[in-house]
Amino acid sequence: MARRLTVHFRTPAPTCVDEELVVEPYGVPLVHVLVPNMRKPLLAHRRFRRALVYAIHREVILRHLTGGGKAPGCRVVSGPFPFGITHDDPLGYAYDRSLTPRPYDPRLALALARVALEEVAAAEKKRGRELSGMPQMVLAHPPGEIAQSACQAIQRQLKVVGIPVTLEQVYPSRLAESPDDYDLVYAELAIWEPVVDAPRLLGEHGPAHGCSPYMSLVLARLQRAVDWNEARSLLPQVHRIAHDDVAVVPLWQMVDHLAYRKDLRGVGTRPVLLYQNVEQWQ
Image (cartoon, rainbow, N blue to C red; front, top):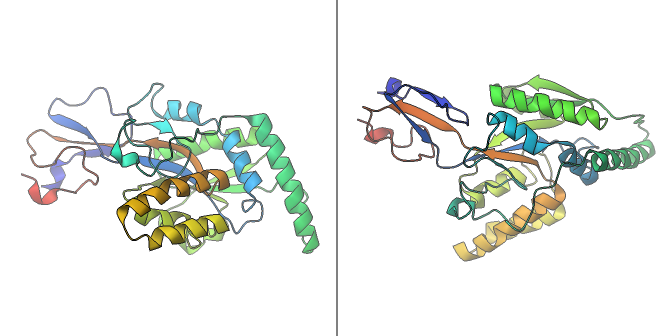
């Protein structure tokens, strides 16, 4: 049965496929971000993380990844939650739509990075450590054409503002074993339920290894929420704090697709997971 589900692939869906195949988008887009390692002094500096956002021309990279055009559901985002496929998509209930993604501004990025470096260098000198120049950043990314292509473009654009980056392909198991070997991690987030996923991603013990007091406070309130309305009202606050703090460097959201043979029944429309309805397959 499983061999009939022939392929899972990235956006955009191919324009030419076998006539015996059905191409179906997944129901929830993936949010692509850079996760900063807050244990690193420079990455712990909010001004430097903002410099990273301004230094990356996200619209251009996304356009390249989607084949040069606008693909449905693919867009630059301002935070870690999915916008949804359409403007009225209920899946985007956690996204604060009053926020506009930060624009590409390499001059501002250069200025912010220099100021952050000076402040961090001064703090490190008081601790008896020298930071004479911009350190080499290691950007880890998972295997895959999308992640590799995106990170290569990010590497080139960060170099323009004086931030040297080395790329390293890393499997999740190795990343968990030695997280401090990396400064930034390219991640594709499946935020299926923001109420549950927000603390795991943005909390003190999340993959960034730290968060601001403001984030800790609102996440604690979210976890103590007694009903859906209270939780729902807190999620845009989480988004706004993540945006202001640059808790993660938001990039874009993309919609992946699956393809299966027409004689396979029961796959469903816009599944969230590949094998979501496997018991109904015929």
